[in-house]
Image 1 (cartoon, rainbow, N blue to C red):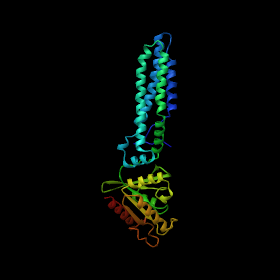
Image 2: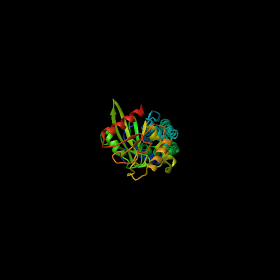
Image 3: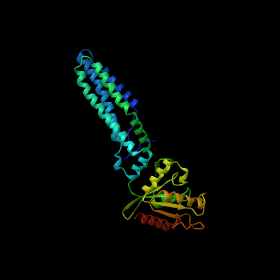
Image 4: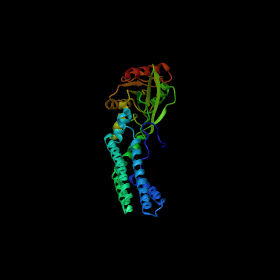
Length: 319
């Protein structure tokens, strides 16, 4: 998967073993390249190794910490999904542990240098310092694992803007993607989302100077929530509740492959799960079929007036 950009872009998080191996290899090369004829030269060679190892360990750990966004300032969708998938409290604890380790390694490096310089046995001081640095990094390996897990999940969080948001729901083939294309008048983007390989479809439109975002949810809000596990339901609930309004589309012709009864059952589940307004619309009204009483509006994708009516109704529900 390509590296994502933006607020949730995080650098690679190494394991403790990876980082220690990298630092010690480079430290050994730095030491090897120094002359060792006199006591002062031998001390400087040991200093060089400690300095190199300390810098690599400390700098790489701090780089990991600083690459993570400030969770409290993220848009609600990002923040709530991170909490569901990783746990905000656990993530903050892991970042704090890695931050502590970076500073501790730097302290050990700084305290070892003068001791090496004036010691009769600089090699012993170097071994002690490197051993303590390695112990510090090994102690935070669980925190590094938690940050690797967080990074993996964050790469699957959609890179969407902080706009007024319409979430489109309903069974497959009821006309959701056609509506998103009609209302946005442009090719929507595909964004990743947890628990679906299809991603979510994101389109935009403007109305009276306000920018709106329309999100279609293939693989998410298109089958019963009761058939999903707890964490899947939580991730889906985040998506629905971050939206300002949910558009639920019903196909009365049942040509989508699902009965009206099944479609209304899913609607009931979504109403129970989401706290935001829901607009229920009957699609494919160019084909004769009884209109379910739950439907507030009728929609024919090829009829621009029909599309515009639904769009304005959604905007009114957001207001």
